[in-house]
Amino acid sequence: MTRLPAARGGATRRTASEHGSAAVQTAILFPVVLLLIFGIIQGALWFHARNVALGAAQEGVRVASAEGGASGADRAHEFVRDLTGGTLIRDLDVSESATGEAVTITVTGKAPSLVPGVSGVTVRQSATAPVERFTEVGP
Image 1: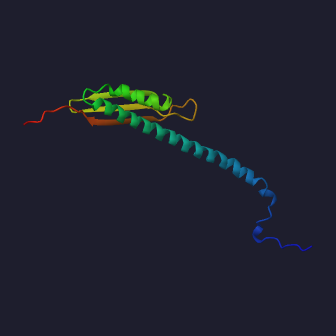
Image 2: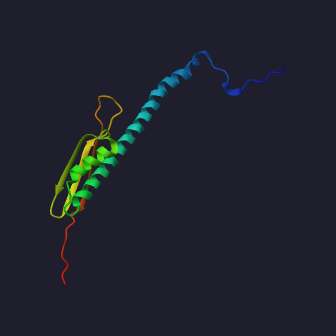
Image 3: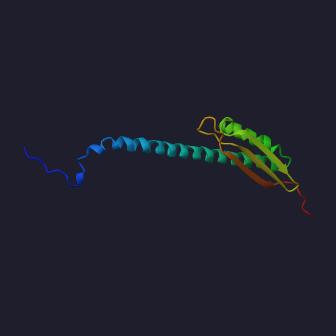
């Protein structure tokens, strides 16, 4: 039986002081990896809540800007409730402001948080559109 020469540089041998170093490295690195994963998921939840709020504001302003339009704030509430079941954006607040020329819908709320007891990041999105109105064209 022929023996192979030992690898140079000490790659195959460990000294007594290095035993268990992989476990220590894993114990230090694992919480960092978990924190990174939770941060990515939390960011995705915030981004999704922000997009839903913007969609609700746009839908509300579309309804409110139509000639003889209904309440845009009510439509924005319905949009969030229908799309997410009302669970994605907590503390939902929809405000509507209109001038003779334009209407603005603002949707504000909190994105969900992965950490229990911690309130989510505030989400605020607005949409503005001109008010449609009938005008007579001269002869």
